[in-house]
Image (cartoon, rainbow, N blue to C red):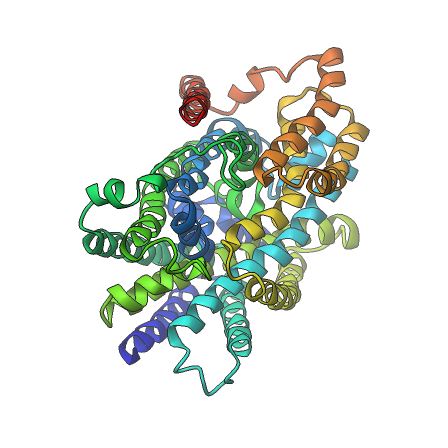
Length: 526
């Protein structure tokens, strides 16, 4: 374990050096700090976008869920491609045409200042609490499991050691984001993504070797090899995949921490190619994250880790990998976590500085004042994120027998439902009623709570489908009756029409295929 510990320490040193050695002017402009001078090329967009998306809940939470439920968990990765390509061919062309810095600016233009402000505040709350808190928790969780012996000098209590690691991870990522802005984030994302792919590939190879090959997945765990599960499954029923489709629109098309790379693209072409390349990467991510969890169930049995399925990843680390390789894998996990944390810090700084500080506090602010406001935001949200991570640690250890990724999803989707309603209203409807849009955004939270309370057996992804479609209907029906849909020509004004049209038909085809697969799964299980 000493070898692994040294490798991980060396990794943190290298990441900090890479982050802090890039070119930086003494007085950065706001566009340089938040959008890297809108000069990102397609490969940087592809790698940084997917690196931001992948964090601890994939390697720990999703692998633990795959151990319990099988490859149906892969839907979270595979279905994401629909959202990514919708961003490439529908949403990003609109954003780049308006040369926005934050999604809020687009929302304000379409739905008014009140809805835009509500959207911005909601996004900041979600990033600063569940976003940062979740990423810090998973990093500290795996670090404590791997190096508990070396961390015993901190405390004999497990929760105290986790808390110390939470603080370290948060402060470490905040430092280079504070000084370097988006450029530093993208530089570190590239090295982190490379390590992540290497580590994930090693885990996949080792697990399949221990199992006896690909064919043994069907021999030893046939019940876990169903991509679509019955509609009444408590977590991953096929009907919930329709709800996941809407949630992916929010995450991939209107999430500031993810879409900020596309906003910083050198051109629309670079943004679209980058997102398409990133979408293809998701297939491989599904492979290296989901298959090892299923393979582990075939190796040790489904009951071996039933008490805490989120230990599936660390079990593989401890039992199947030699010293040195373990260190590389742990670096991959920390890479995935830090690429998420630094992206959220950068996005929080952007949202506060552009949407709140510049708009309401100091309208005459200089670039230097705007950048400094963003840097102060990083410090404040670091504290909030650490406190939230402490709370989630208690929540995690009080429910160790469940796949914690689904618990976190339920918490996060309270906000996400409203975001989906707002962004779909802004993009797909012509001159929607602004008051109805605000009401629909606000009512998603109490409606979700009521369904959770009075329809307890309803899976959270199905609840998402009901809440989002119901609230969208509240805005869409009177709007369509009065004005019709948004003119399709708006989608093509800033893009190559042939490429964009092809992309939209590709998205429609993918959705149709998933619906057909869902129907076939329903028929097979009934």
